[in-house]
Amino acid sequence: MKSIRITAGQAIVRFLKNQYIESDGKQNPFFAGCLGIFGHGIVAGVGEGLLENPDFRYYMTRNEQASVHIATAYAKMKNRLGTFACISSIGPGATNMITGAACATINRLPVLLIPGDIFATRNVAPVLQQLESPFSQDISVNDCFKPVSKYWDRINRAEQLITSLPEVMRVLTSPADTGAVTLAMPQDVQAEAFDFPEELFSKRVWRIPRPRADSGILKEAVRIIKASEKPVIIAGGGVIYSQATEALKKLVETTGIPVAETFAGKGSLPFDHQSNLGATGVTGTPGADLFTAEADLIIGIGTRYSDFTTASKTAFQNPAVKFININIADFDSHKQCAIPLTSDARVCLEELTTLLEGYKVTDEYRKNALEANKAWEKQVDGFFKVSGSVPVTQAEVIGAVSGFAGPRDVVLCAAGSLPGDLHKLWRTTDPKGFHLEYGYSTMGYECAAGIGAKMACPDREIFVMVGDGNYLMMNNEIVTAIQEGIKYTIILLNNNGFGSIGGLSQSIGSQRFGTKYRYRDDKSGLLTGDKLPVNFAENARSLGAHVIEATDIDSLKKALQEAKKQTVTTVITIETDLYKGIPGYAWWEVPVSEVSEIDSVKEAYKIFRENKKKQKYHL
Image 1 (tube, rainbow, N blue to C red):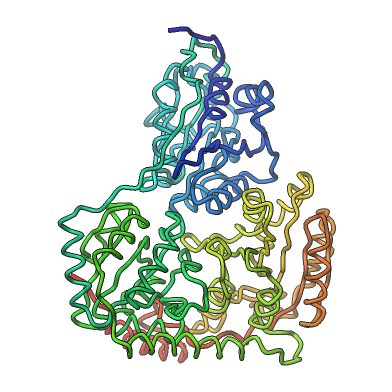
Image 2: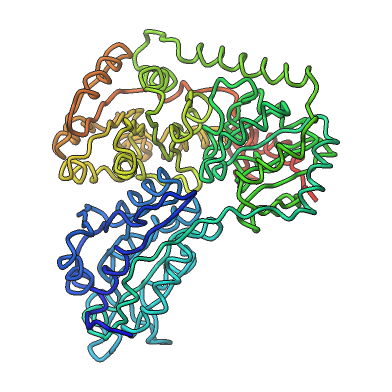
């Protein structure tokens, strides 16, 4: 076997740029390049390897956490068929990536993290940024990545890469086990040379399988479906990642089974499809919540049943309800003590459609679903109606952007009160048109993620909708967008505080304590003074963005038109009402103080106890 003498850092780059992925006969490079910031623990190793390989493009970001968010958003838009490598130095640069790693892993999205690490030789320890332990010399801050990584390894000898790198790819390309993968690289090992086998750097194709469900379990599932009278499908992200939307549509139109969508699954059916009940769970529509409450069968497809989907285990109230789960991950397919169809969603739906030939829900049940869809759309029209009041409502802003967006355009969001309202209100027509990171609901995700989404789909308009709290968390990647000539539109809604957590605080009796952007009041000592004079427009201009200041819905619509004509990232600012939200949210369990001297807390605790009675175990 021929060998080539190169450094470990050079070997990593050569390996990554020759990894390909194939799905349904289509083949593409798996990595779009490398994101990160150079520091002393990475610049002389992997950094030098990138310098030698300019065809594996390096993108300079402004925050290591943002690097991971860009990669995560790219992977999401690519249906997990592509991602980036993210690099950092050995100390705070590395730990900055931990939040991003958790976000990727919880959302089951592939991202490769390569943090620098302390010297493997140990003779100069403690080095700059080293975390010392009196109990072990084999520990560094990179050990913090272990619980938020699907695969973790530390390379203490260059030749360990020969066996580690294929494992890295095995996990990254696994539909069931993907997430963040961490490859900790001691800075001295990165620069060490080794005679690597040339075969390690040959083109390698990772093919994505479409495994079928066990035939016996599938027959049992068919029997249960045919016996059901009020079945409901809950469509999760797996429907979209497996590109099963057409298969779902065919099954639904054949059987009449209605569909409710999770955050990740929104877009599984067009919003106006007669069987689409809309959003489900805590942020669900009235129709979806009613149908799931009465359902005698829940068919979960590609969902992990988060507490927002189950309304903290209060969504499914039929005492005889059964569950069938179609999921690529065995772990998820068994949730709710379901009949587990551990398989690819698309092939399973295709098989179910054939096996269910002749089965249909009643005409009345199908009609009720259609009426629920139409009734909700009528309500949405009401929420979108422009009142003329200033500041405008968040719903009015969503209506303006939704009305302006084209069929293939993308709305992107992650945290605050916007995700819930978007889940309810956004009229999705394309499977990739709704990009919500709500597995981790990461504040600061949006401005960075807009870059990754645009890089994955350069032919689509990306509308990043973000509140003032999230914007202040991480707006720095606007600079990266300007540097790389990446154009997307940020709609910044300023309600002078944390609207979502403020509303939650109010619901549990805590009176929005500590959630408004206010000066401290000298008399009370609380943050209840005048509003803070934050100038978001000037901030965005200072980062290089084109900025438009809207004051009402008419000026917002004009701003959207202007932004579309721009060739650079545009930030549109508009002030919104902190208190006027969308009604009708279901209960979500957040503990309320059992004892308190505050009357509003006492009242909230009574409501909490009543809602707890509705929670169910599904066995």
